[in-house]
Image 1: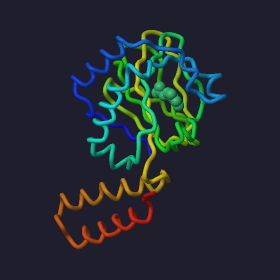
Image 2: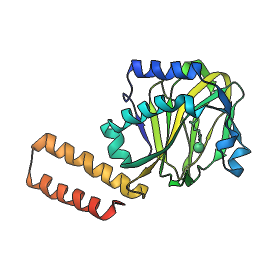
Image 3: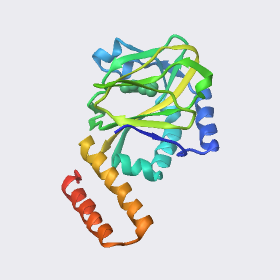
Image 4: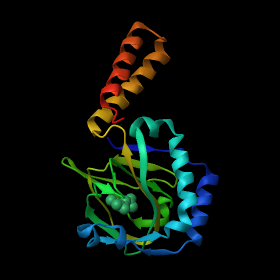
Length: 218
Ligand SMILES: O=C(O)CCC(=O)C(=O)O
Ligand SMILES: [Fe+2]
């Protein structure tokens, strides 16, 4: 399941993030790529010490977003990184490392920080067996996807693309199980809103809670 999230961040949050991005040094991004990904990675990443506080604010905002919680069932953030793509930069096809800092990566996300009119190109492309799908969202919106996807960032041909990329471990490692729980949760809420605490609602919530007991890692 690929999910787009808006309204996780206030205009003030975005100002804080942009301000940190303006004041921080960026380095060539190759040192955080695996062997093969290095060959196709042409971007810049911010100094991790300078961005630490801002990135933990981003984590806190996400952990307060109900849709994010339901879609990801987070156990732990693995890493967040501020990345910049200037004209000519790109990140070719790759699949993210399965383990980063000794933690399994289940879900990857991109939080877009530049307005889509501020740069040309720079789409995040998720490759699926049914074809490619390109994502270029307004500033403040986020796309999250299972870390199992092959993906790339198209070359930025003009302007600057600023994003925060992140990875997390989910308490439900299987993306299919995660999606079923997500659908079930939304159905439960719909049923409750429409008809209240009906017999259907009770039985559905029994299924939801017991599936969680079976599938949660801990
Ligand atoms: O910038 C993005 O949208 C994604 C970058 C990416 O794939 C990565 O850093 O692993
Ligand atoms: Fe990636």
